[in-house]
Image (cartoon, rainbow, N blue to C red; front, top):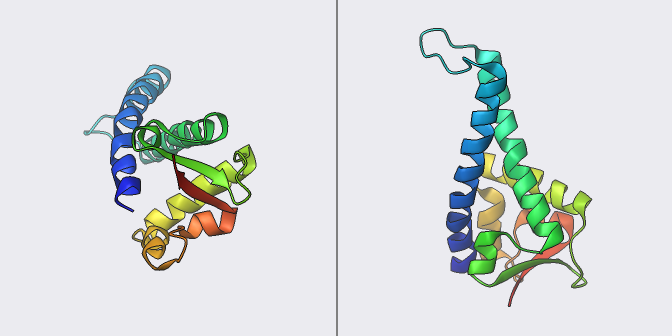
Length: 134
């Protein structure tokens, strides 16, 4: 379990870089999106959604093409389907959305892995995926 946590922390670094680029593109399109004196709540909420979409793209592309994110590769972890094959795009998107729900519920789906005999998270169970060690 500590490898999973370490890989999640490690994945924050490329995500922050992607978020900076994505936010810069957003500002180029909407110019003054962040003005503390005159905030636009709708644009700020859409910026949050945009950053979640960018993060989702990072995870979905990493999981479907390589089977692992940068952090997972560093800690020698791989995401596979229950039968050992590579995860598909639909399952990867569903897994990402369910992981976000899990995080919103104070990480409940991640805590679930401590009690699961196969050390699978809630979103792994629902999507039919599992983490393997290389």
